[in-house]
Image 1 (cartoon, one colour):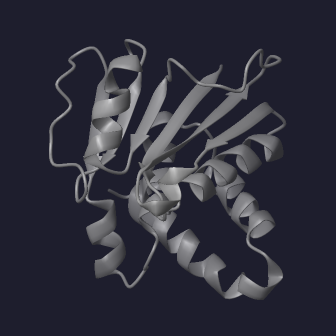
Image 2 (image 1 turned 135 degrees about the vertical axis):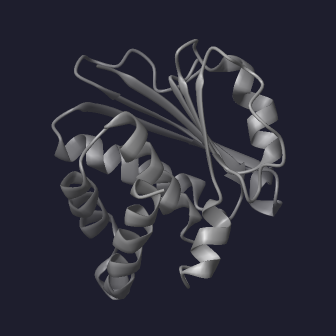
Length: 176
């Protein structure tokens, strides 16, 4: 099974961290992995995205041009990438920041108010991880335990206090 995931949002929403977590989880599960960030002027609030490939087979290109999964953290990202999602693919949107519906009927679309849930649960900056939880629930891309190991690996020792909040954020996404 190959998952070609494209995550996109504004610079500062944690899109690249989301991608790093997915890539680390893939490594923990023994998959072939690529993580390809795209940023530049995005650091000033423009659209930022990253491609993540998780596969049982070698990966030919790290660039995801036709994702099987799109995670859209804002409306411009959904509008920019929705037409590239493969038929039968999955689209997960942060409905707090995406003010439009997915109009395609050949994809499975899920909306979750991730930014609002993060704010309501005192998880500032946790919307990206809530969306990973939703991804885990809807696709089974990896397990809760794999996610936990990935977070523990990625979060540096001086920020270890953030691990519990990330685990809580993922559970919110899984249970939504």
